[in-house]
Length: 158
Image (cartoon, rainbow, N blue to C red):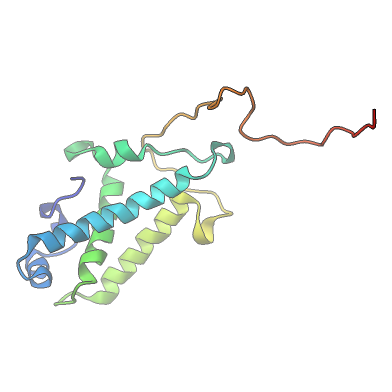
């Protein structure tokens, strides 16, 4: 698991998680899994673009398959914030909703910048120092470049 319940203490107190989940750790785990999945989708969204536009293709399996100290701290922090939002959706005992919502919105904006989607689709993207996948220059063996441009050849009736 990329993120554990014990690591959530940075963003939520244990008593708050206990009140929300009423002692059921599975509810907290589901919130964590939903948060990690949501962050993962943003990195996958940037992979949907072709390499020709300059964006790196992130190795999502390697980024989210890492454990312990091998995890990227920035991605881990974003996952914690999004997971806290998913957990706080269940209830709001003694948690200042506005603070959690504001942090969640900031993380989502950052993820949109990384993925190059939403309000940031025409602007330069953020490129964190994460593992990427090298593009295959000729994936189908046709010898064609992935992106072609130029004029059409002149048509002749011959």
